[in-house]
Length: 538
Ligand code: NAD
Image (cartoon, rainbow, N blue to C red; front, side):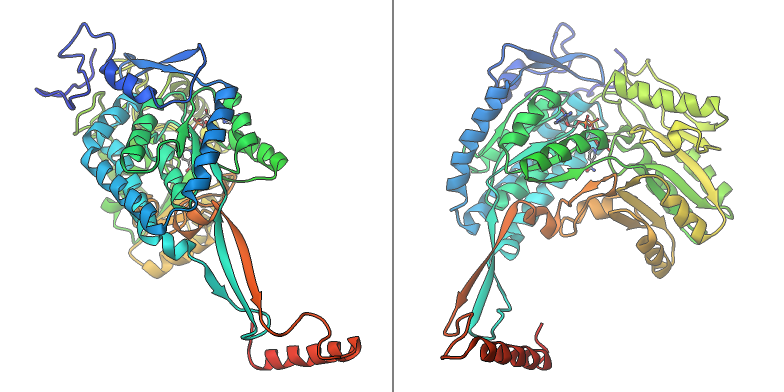
């Protein structure tokens, strides 16, 4: 095994380091695995042997759920939802802030598990507890602002008083992917709990243990046992019963699966938010700080091996600074430290699976066969682990190549020169996706003007993706084939509520009053409307 292992210390008491214990068949202490999997609602005879993609070594056996388990989970969660909806904002805030502290205190344990289960570098794993803690704190501090009844303008001044109430939907189903298994399994559910709902979630089959550790923390934070339940198994099998039993579905994953889920939710007449794929562009203008842009581009293209929804796969550079920028970008990429293991000090780890490695390799081979130039990378690294691939920069990519507009979801980026601002915007808007974009420029007003013309749900200026993703007060999500709905901010919690308008009417009735004929009533009302308009009423 060539993986970089912790030097001189096991990273956490619960983890077993194969270098120190070469006979261990499992990387993880099996008491940890049993402790975590105990929380699953899973009665099937079938199970999955989850392996670490970084080394291929087994992590643990995880039992699978049946469709009956899904129904049972929703029934239990529905009972808890009724109780939880009655809790005060202060009680929800207390649990959310406890969760924030627990995540920060137990971050090393969380990082170990994420690294083993995904093969990603520890620095990229660190984004996950950070994001979940930020989300917990944000909704703790703002849930009253988002959810408390709001006075609205009644139709008759003073005599009609109306309030907008936010009522929890009930039980929210959450289906999440493997790439950010802690944040994608937890952050959306935290907003659902804050809004007064229960949750039934299904993590991806590659990464159940990280999600289960999250569930353990949810319960330790004080959320009632049974308020959040988890099932495990193939999405194709468990997705339909989840949708049939849920009051709302929050899905994060591929655009292809998102379309299937949207159709099934439409059939049930329930809402859904869909956080889907991307082919995200960066624009580097000629007045940009090129070092800063090169640093951002490396992080954006290669964080978690490019397996990040907001990763950059297309880089457009003003032709006057193209050569200077590309030199810096390639040099930084070549200097990256690629390794397996759970230690700090690694810039890129493994891809998740053989399938993902094959997609990456096929995209690069197809591009090279059709004339693309390789500036660095373009090779697998079996010496590091079964699914390692070099960070890869391509030039000369055109629209007959798969990598041009298809999402690779791997460490591959194509660089293109542009001649004008208008051309840069047109290139950035090519294709069907619209998730995230970035603009690098020293001229903030110009960068914001360009941002407004880009059809993406988030645009970062002088940063690749972190500024929008970590700013929880602002909504985050995709336009076009990148999704529907938004996580984070007011939208991220309001999606889990039904809006109910409650009006109290004083004195005046809606119909002829005080003996007026129908026609006289109509005349009085018409005159009243004109008077209200003259008074500037909405
Ligand atoms: P995927 O769609 O194959 O799987 C995602 C989840 O959906 C998994 O839990 C899976 O079990 C489940 N699933 C699969 N088929 C299903 C079905 N028919 N019904 C119900 N559930 C089903 O996606 P993936 O390949 O695992 O994840 C990578 C994709 O996710 C990429 O396209 C990436 O861009 C996207 N993604 C988007 C965001 C975002 O916030 N926009 C974040 C992370 C990942």
